Length: 176
Image 1 (tube, rainbow, N blue to C red):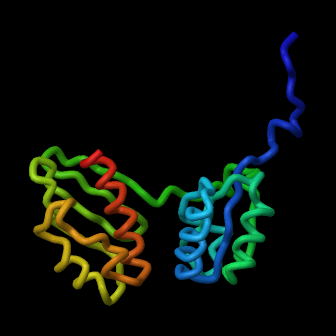
Image 2 (image 1 turned 90 degrees about the vertical axis):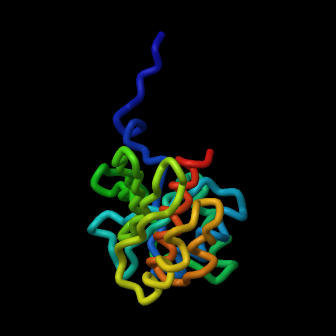
């Protein structure tokens, strides 16, 4: 006999997202939660949940109490924890990849990194509006993915953070 789920059971959310005041809090919370072993990811908030920061942390809803306790204990509580019980509330993927044949570009939020596929050399860094973008570009362009410093090690702005996400995705696609 097949098990039939009620409509209420079918709509029960299994993911949620945490909303923070600023990017620094998102970065701090991400580091804390990953260190604790939670399966989370940083994403863009749905438009109706933008409250000063353009990033949210998606998390398994079943872990909400544990996550909130840990973040409270580490003085990094979110503004809100929202269950994703509606497709319109789903966080937005902030990473997109475009293959141009000889080159591959990864965009994370407002930052883009382009790499020549045959040499794995970073040929362009663009986007953002943070004051450290020219510095990041200078330190990365012309180096291979293996030679280049990690953006989060040399920059401390939202742009550096977004560029680091692009760098991680590029590394996954090209080196692994």
